[in-house]
Amino acid sequence: MGAQGGVKRNLKARHLQMIALGGTIGTGLFVGAGSALATGGAAGIFLGYSIVGMIVYAVMVALGEMTALYPVNGAFVHYASRFVDPSLGFALGWNYWYNWAITIPTEIVAAALVLDYWPRAAEINVAVWITIFFIVITAFNFMGVGAYGEAEFWFALIKIVTLLGLILVALIITAGGVPTSDPSEYPIGFRFFLQASFSFLGTEIVALTAGEAENPRRNVPKAIKRVFARIVFFYVVGVFMMSLIVSPNDPGLLNNSGTAASPWVIGIEKAGIKVLPHIVNGVILTAAFSAGNSDLYAASRTLYGLACDGQAPRIFAKCLKNGLPIWSLVATASVGFLAYMNCGTGGERAFNYLVAIASVTGLISWLVILITYLRFFYGARKQGIDRDAFPYKAPLQPWASYAAAFMITVIIIFSDYQVFLADSWDIGSFLSAYITIPWFFLMLIAWKVWKKTTFVRLEAMDFSSGRRALDLMEEEQQRLYRPPQTWWEKVWDWLM
Image (tube, rainbow, N blue to C red; front, side, top):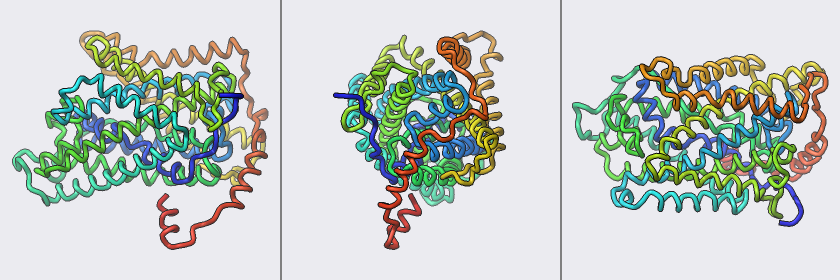
């Protein structure tokens, strides 16, 4: 292990583009959207995904401006400490680490449940599949960031091609282009429109890759700029087409167990199409792998960034010669063993509570990113810094950040309002929905009191540290950069 080193910039432009695009496409869209459709109906899910899509865009462009200017380890955790208060960075960092660390076993369990679609696989004890998936997911990360980036590139490509195909298939089914297994029940057209839900957490992971990306000032803005069009197409158009081929009242959606609840699989099966449901189910399996792969990367790099900023034990800042933050990765991967809780009946409920808590922490992270950006924005204005000179300038600011911050606050407050309307008080549901809020403030206050941190004033914000070294690195990378020459290279560069 030797002396402490640092992470290496081994992620190429194509890796960043696919992580920015495919990183958000996971089991939430392929499977979880079914629960949202059953709960809210077609119109609701379309409205929900559209609203959250706009929130995600506001978060990403704000984060993109800071990340392109300072592509450092820890990304938004570092920015919160630098532009607001070190105590906020500490609370955000540990909040974000928990958010993705606890999602690792969630995706491992999701991958195991996907196999229930095939009867023979379902006969094997789930602990066997959990073990296999745990080993495979961690292996990609332990091979280094290059292996992680390459795996995510191909995983994302598979998901994108599949989703494009599913949208096309849904269009054909809606137009009546396939035989149906039961024409009297099968929905064709716009018969099922009503209410909704959403799930986008993970888009911000691309910012964490900036510390290990080649030419981040060129490639990070390029990835960020194209997020909105991709969100609109893959999520909004995707759920719209999905809602056309599956009824919100379908019992398969209400089943909510395993991939039998995948609205895409249900719709294709009802259309009487053979083989394709098995292929889609296989892609959902790779989506779970991809999500677990990204979760482990995001959580381990967050812990590494905390250690680099002195907000976690220094041992977590140690890297191997190839730039792998070994102890951050080992500690984070260990959380994956919680997946085995799902093997017992008693542990399953506790496991579900942990997952619910992790969902709220993701929204809190988005809110803090926006608060940090607003401080960054007004700090630059106070010091007379021209944002037009930045590598990337976020549009519609500061109003987009204010609007998104307001919407996220509303979502957090009403995340589980049903608990207040129920006849009997469910303490477990209440705590899983709201305990994260006081816990976040407890971490913030504890670090502030212990370290006696001070709130960063606008006129005292540091906009210069680290920029010179990054400027020199950018100049060298621009000198070595070869623009696309042939027509197919230009097309690929435009797509990516």
